[in-house]
Amino acid sequence: MFNKTIETLELDKLRKLQSERLLSVVNTVYNKVPFYKNLFDKKGIKVSDIKSINDIHKLPFTKKEDLRDQYPFGFLTVPESKLARIHCSSGTTGKPTVVAYTEKDLQLFSEVVARSLTAAGAKPGMKIHNAYGYGLFTGGIGIHYGAEKLGMTVIPVSGGMTERQINLLRDFKSEVLCCTPSYALTIAHELKKRNIPLSEINLKYAVLGAEPWTEAIRTEVEKGLGVTATNIFGLSEIIGPGVSQEAYNEKGTGSYIWEDHFFPEVVDKNTGEPLPYGEEGVLVFTTLTKEAMPFIRYWTNDICSINYDKQGSRTHIKMSPIKGRADEMLIIRGVNLFHTQVEELINDFSELAPNYQLIITRKGSMDNVEVKVEVSENYYKEQRLNGDLLNTETIQNNENLTVLTKKLEKKIKNNIGITMRVKLQSCHQIPKSEGGKLSRIVDLRK
Image (cartoon, rainbow, N blue to C red):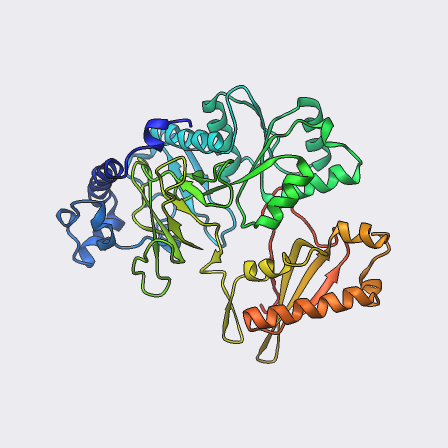
């Protein structure tokens, strides 16, 4: 552990610390951020009403549109001259979401990333190949400084230029890879395509995040790169990467949230009411220690559950993998749909690879979903087929694959309640990421 005292703090002591920090941050934002003062006053909330962390549900939510409305510096609690760094979140339309840091905030950022990397298996003295993007996006620089705080040697490769990535992995012998899951698959496939044995690289761990992924993708990454792969979670508005992290020896049990700094809740997406541990809803965070731009009950739109793991190595709460996003949820013919529901069904078929896209179209008033999914490389080998020759036409004429298509379509209908057309693709036919996020949904209705 990077900070054993905090990471194993007894729950009652953790609650006391959270309560003290919540009272401080509530006083700060009320007195220094006009947005919060006006919001509290409008809703009749008095700072004196908040006596402990148990009162957090009395506070209002902060949503992304609020950040855009206060662009660029409406949420600052310090003068602009006190800022050490400014980032913007990625993937938004219109005005970007601005996040600002004091020097103290940057130290916090490095601390939680160092904790996360340690939980992922990294150690001081190891080399880390950082293939997250550098720039306004918080990912690359956040990982960079956290790794340096841990005492690692950082190779700041950034994203893209896969051939160069592989050359540096072979030459520098990095033990840890940081990137998106889809880009890890891209690197693994390129290694295989070039017949580069894993003995020529030295990777031991992969710390993957910035997009949802599943156990099937984990298996493919671990096999393709010879690593133990874990999930790192974060969002720019809260700090960046390092809000939570999966422990390398507790895979599949959730990711530890560093709740001495980021207090999590899961709430009903319609009513906003807090949900019990274990129930799925919208993940909400309150930043307890951020200085420049703290947020009260920030509505992330990510769907997951939280729970304490009595068998875990740390006392902090764990979050489940992100099931989807409340604002990206598809409603198809009256049925709520997350793309990960389809992915779970695809994973039941060994003939298929975990690389897919949902293509959404509309004919008249009817929405339609087509599932494009690749045939796995193992299937080529088992059937002694030439991957280059197995194209869309030959797939359609392959009796076994025709039966497989019908099975998957039936399974989707029975489990999700929507009729979808499945269209099988050749290996690597669906575009993979060159370092950024991979879009699983292509919505052509607009």
